[in-house]
Length: 266
Image: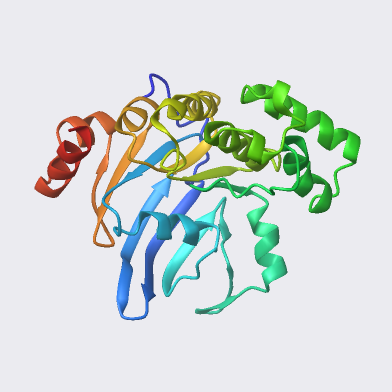
């Protein structure tokens, strides 16, 4: 666990992210079953669990890449993906949803960089095209972010000229370029060769130390233990256990959590 977290006086009165009784099914397969979870501003929450437990689906629901079948998701008191009228909610127009997503950065397993654009062009695309930031300002900001992720010398390189770890760090810089309130990471190191994982985790640790609110789906137990403020173990579409990283990882209360942790650490 991190040595220092924001004090109650530094945090918002209400959580930055509120997930309330969220349900999601794909056909007859119910992948999220009444999920309730809070994430405070400046907090790093790590989602652990086996494949198929609903972790990535939950992450995608937070920025409405997947619609939900029940419940509510709020980011900074903004109901995500829906407008409430009376007791009913109605899905927003895609343009309104896209506007909400400006405040939520997401980093995927597979980088999703534009292959025909250089690293710096990938980073400036959204700030100029979506936010209308002047090109000179976007370029200056992009270089700051590339330096922040240790890639200032690679600004003019295309994705095919970068290693997987470098591409993922560019993807992180691209997400940060929109100045999000929240960063979502969907197993950001799972597609990387083992020797490339460390650089990406170092960037994420740096973000955590600077107070970025993050929700991270990961199997990197060391990262969860060291950078996390809260660990949530999911299985079968439910939250089995959540709490302090040291407690959940070192002294889990549930046998299912214990078995999973032991399997990952082998």
